[in-house]
Image (cartoon, rainbow, N blue to C red; front, side, top):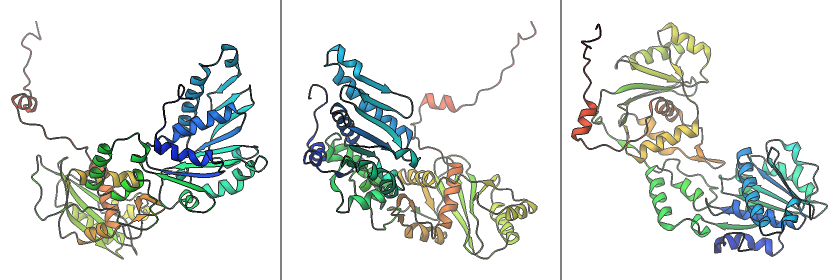
Length: 423
């Protein structure tokens, strides 16, 4: 078989050991890039050749396609070793739902997603493979109601393979006595060198996301609350040295019983400076409009972005007072990642008078059921900051040395009239 597959590492041998020992309930808790999809593809090919019936389940169509393509590649490599008359027994279905059949022994494997539960029932299976299991929200329900009954006749097995995503169903199952759990880190997988992992550790530290490094590369299940931002921005009352006149963007998180939070961000596209904040409770839309008008008139060409869930009645009142904010981008995870990028390159600065924002920053904790987002209990100023950053964010660029050529590029061209235009 070594002529077909690349040799496996010691870490990958640990993942395959429970299968060799005859275990029927197996959980692979892995860091990134340990080769779990490769191992599952090899396992699927071996079972196909033995005439077994398999179901490969993934959270999305794209992930299912990746698993199918890897399995097809490995089976095609095997077919090249066989005489030509045996290759006709292989059948490939490349359209959704994807599938492979080996008619010589009757083995088959089908690739499905977990989005439509009902398509998963009615099979009689030898094995079920669930790739990226932590990304399936209702995993326990799907197993109990649809998948486990399909393995009853043949006493089939189940392999759950994934990088953790907090305290999800996958994490709970891997910690139970029902499954034989194998845990390996990215370094244990043997495919990524230690230098790269150390570099990523420092990058995640700069981004204030050390808990995400532990999850993604160490394969750690984050079952206890922890700080969402493990690093604070620059707290200073001195604005940055602007390379151009800064723009002003105000992010607004609407509230009445909960705080009405507005964060003002100044930026020249390089640095981002939070110089002011409004944080009030039980203010009417008329009072909020007055606060916003006074808050925005300190700078020219101020843009306002507001929580998309703001009531229409409040927006109409703002409009009567000349305040017409733009609906903000409400991508929570993407917005936090933009803020982390500013942290990484020391581009985010906050005035010490913005005490509510600083307090929320220091007390924010990640959601143990979704570790790339924070617990939405006291995040009003943070949400306002996220809205503003998403509106004006620009990717980081390394500063270029000033040379003769760069000066020529920055010099505006003068318009010269064509003297021969009328000839």
